[in-house]
Length: 174
Image (tube, rainbow, N blue to C red; front, side, top):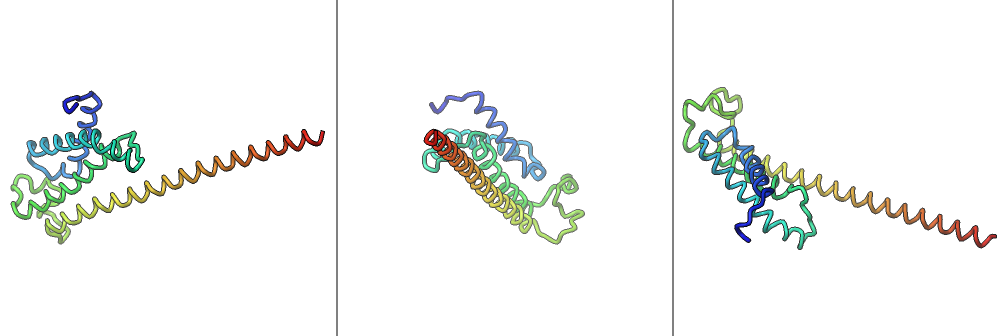
């Protein structure tokens, strides 16, 4: 079953490749590196759909019907970390002169006083801050949804009890 590839896997892998290259896309100047990173993101996403998804459902009762975790989450986090790695590597390698004006964080026109290493740390911190906000808001939305469902079932049950009680009252009075 390792070589079974379905059309949905190809579609998801293509989207995951775009997700993982999204953050560092303005920073990577080599098309071969961008292609390799996209391929790694696609392969990782497909692997997670087959291996990690069933384990999340079995052990944590999390059903990822839209691919939020495997298609957007894992490649997005890796893309954010990768953008920090790429920026930090500019500190060691330097930037080719032809690319300096087109990169979003180059020394030319740099109004901030950050080094590339500091900017890399900010990129990675921003990635994990976004992850924390997403987890918090997701938990709150799940809690609110569960509370609304339980409240609506409680109201329905209470209303049914009242209607049943009224019917019984009418029949006993007659």
